[in-house]
Length: 387
Image (cartoon, rainbow, N blue to C red):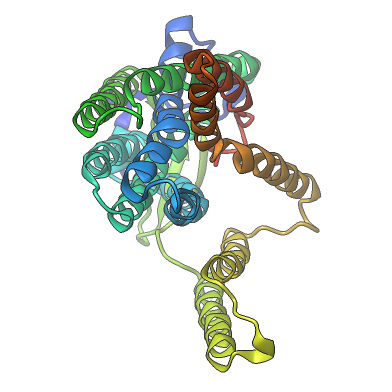
């Protein structure tokens, strides 16, 4: 029986059976597991609250900014819906030589580097389509790093320190949100002349990229994942061992049921899209289904398919179903207001200028309220990465 023993790898911890057998972590270890949350929240608070609305406004102007912003945000949000569980699933099934360095860290490294590369494209976008495509890729690559990062907590932290580590992660996330809004609000101002706006925009993107890279390296270097030992029997079967427990290696292949779900979902999307196109072409009942409604309908169908693909069963797991539903409603309320709040602040600023009021004070007050509404909601240690 050949054994690949990754205990010799400097980046791996000794083999452990489960969370009850793990030693208590020092505060520096807890910080190293949690610190990347600051970078993620800084990144998304700056982009979603200040930067993207301002870029859309600069590209399309006052009249079409709301529609254009929705065009940019909705496809990216849909991509994050499947990318997050996808990369969590892939990291769970990563083994072999790559896993000797860690199941999660390769995704954190590659995902962050690609995320930073696409941020350069976002900063240089000069039309809505380019901005939307870049934003979709940022969502995809960010989730490629984010889902495995959040899996580090249940992988490494002992049971008795779950609460402390989750609290530390949440605190750093709040700090990142505050920092992202303050920095982007300080440097990005769509009311300034174009050269000054561009200078502030690139400076803010540069700060985001630097924070992402530095804190990613801290995570990659400082965090040591528990090792997996690979055993091969005489018949060629492979097993992953963690401590004294063995279980079959999970291969990266789709089951027949998963393949059927993917095919049926794509077929349902095509059929419904064709029916809506036919409805518009025939002008049935004198009504037209606009593009936004079509987009929502198709994304609902795709969402149902994704939930089925990841074995979501409300009858079997009612508590988990309620978590998803309540989180959906909560996020819907927050993002319905938050996404367009920057435009509202600009309206207040213009009104204040007409009434000779202090527009700076109005902006600071509104952004303070925005920060409070955007405080992050982090999952428990066993629920995976946030959306």
